[in-house]
Length: 317
Image (tube, rainbow, N blue to C red; front, side):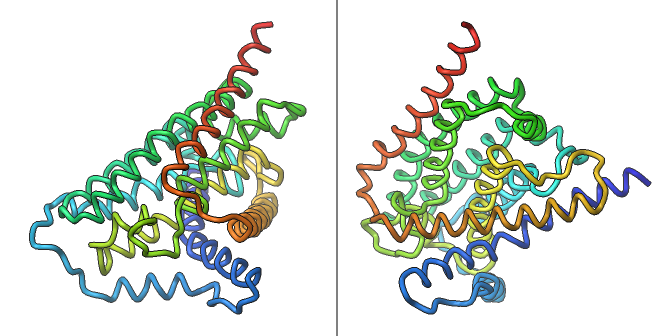
């Protein structure tokens, strides 16, 4: 009976991540529209867009290989699994032992790798351009993310997210190294999700787009899966920030239904606050040139490295 209950809670988290991802994207768009004194589309518009794409016929290029057809499913599966591993409303779930920061980084890297291959598969100039830019960004974002993982591992003595959240809840004090890791994670999250100033998710200008250039040849359910994977990825990074740096409200292992409901309400509040802050950031800053992105991510890498060095030196002394 306990096994069935644990599986039910784990399945609820997986479905919650899947259901909230389009709503989060719609909420960010709505807040941005309000900040720009526009009415904006409904927060439910991403659901309608996905439903419309799922009803459309898939159009494939003549020279598209099997990889081009398989990549949307691989990207969606890897991103969904990575997001489902991050504790949202409770820790200590039945699959929490797999919620490792290194495993999540590997899943995200695998999804990015296959998407870049798919962008080059058809042989269009836009696909190659987007893939080359994506690889350039990822080559700087992934080392910065690894440095952040090292910083958290030195504090919690583990890379398992439930353990990290428990250590943060127990109180680690004010640490400059954790503040540096938080800023670095926010910079990486902006770059990984293709948000302003690194990329503009609402543009289709060939001189500026990165993610959109890789998926121009996709349509129908394939494009729906890629779009949903992008929305889940945004929710993943907000969940990661909430779990590691703002873990208050998370239900502990073995908690009852009441504690889990409180955790779910707390999680919804954290997502809403993160969405508002993201919208404020994007409306207050302009998109940078592509060749300035290495400087942006270089700052994240140096902040992560500095946080790791501070923790290592302080631990040795």
